[in-house]
Image (cartoon, helix red, strand yellow):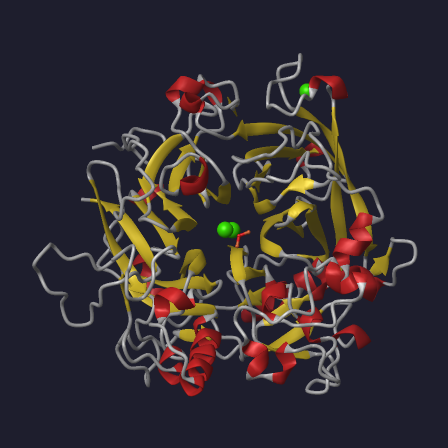
Amino acid sequence: GHGATKGLAFGPIAPVPAATDAFTVPDGYRWAPVIRWGDPILRHAPAFDRDAQTAEAQAGQFGYNNDYLDIVPMLPTGRDRSRGDKGALLVANHEYTNENLMFPPSTDPAVLAERKRIAMNAHGMSVVELRRSGPGKPWEYLRIGGYNRRITASTPFAVSGPAAGSDLLRTVDDPEGRTVLGTLNNCAGGTTPWGTVLSGEENVNQYFRTRGTSLREQRYGLADKATTRGWEEIEPRFDARNPGYENEPNRFGWIVEVDPHDPESVPVKHTALGRFKHEGANVILAPSGQVVAYMGDDERFDYLYKFVSRDTMRTGSKRADREHNKTLLSAGSLYVARFQGDSPAAEITGTGALPADGEFDGTGEWIPLVVDGVSHVPGFTTEEVLVYTRLAADTVGATKMDRPEDVEPNPHTGRVYVACTNNTDRGKAGKEGATEPNPRVANRDGHVVELTEDGDDPTASTFRWTLLLVCGDPAAGTSTYFAGFPPEQVSPISCPDNLAFDAAGNLWVSTDGQPGTIGYGDALFKVPLEGAERGHVQQFLSVPAGAETCGPVIRDNESMVFVAVQHPGEDGTFDAPQSNFPDYVAPGRRPKRGQALGPRPSVVQVWQG
Ligand code: FEO
Ligand code: CA
Ligand code: CA
Ligand code: CA
């Protein structure tokens, strides 16, 4: 019925109060989980039993707290190409675990040790084969699928790029510095033009106890403090004070690459893309044939980066072409962004009020950290730039941003969007105040930067920028900006986190933090970027109490949307759940077999029907 409309057709939903335990979609749409925490995906794995979870079971089941998500088509030359659009691969990250929701209270040391092993196996990533009857129809996951795969905190990764084999990456378990067990705190990500998935290792300091005395540790949030997860109590490498494990934390905080089309492939950690609290990475093909990856370091006052490959992408569909493309992120140049505003500093008042020229905007440059494998930072070797990237960037005048989360180039225009989620410390005593690219002190609601590379060339060394959105709830009197669109006509939005684009070129933004700022549940929004509708933020869905909205995938050509619902019922407990998402049952009804009340992080599909 809505075929003539540009992009997905829907009437925006009203914002949903934060305490509401419901998944809310527009009129005319339905939703269902595709897969939930604990659903078995490997042959040996049992059905989920909330009361009897084991580490062995979890190793073969879908992990916890899904963040990055994509539904990746089968390769045109792969063994399952004949399934066409009736088959696909779901790839999801499992960022971290919420033990208070997963387990009842216990003080039994054996039980607590087993729970740490469960948590390790609930981290990482999943690849899951999907089937459906046709386009626009909901997917089902394959309980036994040839591509199904779990990657956990123990899965071997190969280290690639200039820091592979570095002294800074060697441990007693890996004297070569080339093989790391596991990936941790995988937040957002991106799917490459060659069909692999990139994933960002974000808050990896949470997992390690260190001596904590060096600036190299402190700048990464590492400290001599027992971790909340306590993995250092059962696995010595998580206590970097132990002789031989001093470098173990250096082996996390990377962009990893996983090939979902080859279940036997060894996943890779890419040192050429630097080490920081990687939110994710998104790749675009430059006119030269080189590929460019855009990346954010999600910490208050941290930086925006890009990587430019040395080699060019092959577009053929032979196996050798794909294998070549899987090496593109191993060699190239790493840059950090410096922004320059074009309005007088006195006009950036910190309130969010626009300067006289009517825009937060200006120019910028990409400052080289490493060029074709050679350090450009005085006093830092190449290996030091890549392993201690934050410290290198600190010395070159990079612009301190308000927690850059997803950074994503629009495939239709090449313009790059940066979700700066918030920074409540901006303007505090001893901290940097408002700047034109980060124009609010105590930035509670966040903003979205639109960056245009000079010459529309992703490899350019200079760019122009403008703030597309200065987020908030206009009805609450917050100073907001929606690219000039009337604020009284938009959906309120706060704490932008993940970004996506639909086939019509509209931006989609998911949020993490609205309950604590504007009082509504986290949500997913469409934002047109062109013409009279530019900046018209429209809410599509709302996630249940306690959850953040992650991994949006927009398939407007099929009127379908997918989201990863992370940490539903976050503020509840195992015994007193705040959410029963997604297996809600009507009052007085009993859960069906395989359903267990209490929240389960899940991937949700939304379709017209
Ligand atoms: Fe895991 Fe930056 O959010
Ligand atoms: Ca300006
Ligand atoms: Ca995030
Ligand atoms: Ca988040």
